[in-house]
Length: 97
Length: 506
Image 1 (spheres, rainbow over the protein chains, first blue to last red):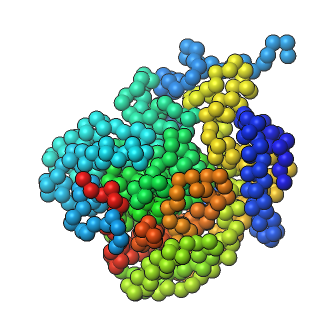
Image 2 (image 1 turned 180 degrees about the vertical axis):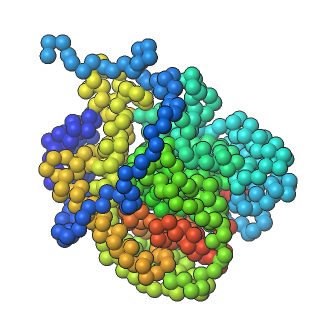
């Protein structure tokens, strides 16, 4: 059973604002989903390694050759806040901290 | 055949398969411009009601068609020259020039409010390759937000409606693409399939849809959902069309490190109609509890057709199939929660515009994401968080190993597998939205294939209660030729390839 506090904590980790109503609904739904996921608990995986990808790929390398990337204007065109040639980022530190 | 179908030769231009209209183009009986106009007329008539497209580039398509017609007149030939198609709106389309100004290209939303108005500065590999093959882009199709869904009801821009019954879902997440192809609005379309998002809507909309082997097609420019499972693939009206489009999409792309550098076979050459001597396995666990009897009946009949055509049918077992859903619903939300961290309200997309960084992150994402995306971000973050990582995420990765090993072992004894695509036919809009678990069960027969990274195709195999049923052919890694051969042989033997919805008239 997942608590409302758990959901709030995870939402904080995910930098995701949830309304009170969303928190309530999410608590009920996540509890049910996690209950369904419990079927994995009974699977004996003591001698099984994890699979992160199905491909047998390792260290895909390429030559380090310079090439044109996105132009600055194209890269900045979708930014909601811009200052000159830079992305503008809301302040990180508040005064007095 | 049931209601809404039409016999060969009587289909309107917009509803014909590519291989027929390509022959008409070659003989000069129609132009690419005619094909574009036929699709645009359908989009005009039905598009808004079915909510198929999120962006249509009518003028750009007309211009591209005229260029294709001129090229053909000059003797140029390309596999898809002049064929109009649609991209799922999860593929970015270049819409900005180097000066950062709109260049007439189409926006990309991924079905999300958070990307409303986003203009990509670069093109996806799918767009690049299809353009190079001569195809003409009509527009971007509606889909579940970030491809998370099985019914298309999670699109921020409203649900897509199924042309077989307009109060019904078309399946998802690539429902706009499946409907565009079913309803004569595009001759083919791309989709993405993470747990069934091509095959399941193909089944519910009555078209062919294929998820290639993981690594067969580049994911460059595909808005990421769960990167170890996402794969691009085609929708078409016949297996032959899907083979043709797959040939254009497949191939090595250095821009996607998981796109494998292995030769692309001639998929059309595999379509020899011959299944004699092939051993085809039927995994008993795929006939899941709660499967509709009409669906099982149609799938069993399809298997019998292949047996009649000379294939050797054997029952096989994939005992961990019932663990697939739980495995999938840990791995994909975990990967999604990481992938979706990029939507920060700073570099692109929606922003809350609050002058405090943390608060801006929280509000931007709270405002921009819809309920299913939030649910998966929370679930994934939970599964990856301290204290739960081993119990959930690592455990799921271990079970993934087991599921894959079972597929590999069984596919060592047979040439391909036959199974249902979805446990049900198309269901009413709203029927499953209140219960995420019930919705997730739609993908019980498709998501194990993604977990194992294998190729799978869904092919229409008749109607149940007047609605399309699909069955799957699942193959060995990179053995798309056998999958396509079996699927095509079925279509030749069964004659369901002219199945069309009631919208198939001019």
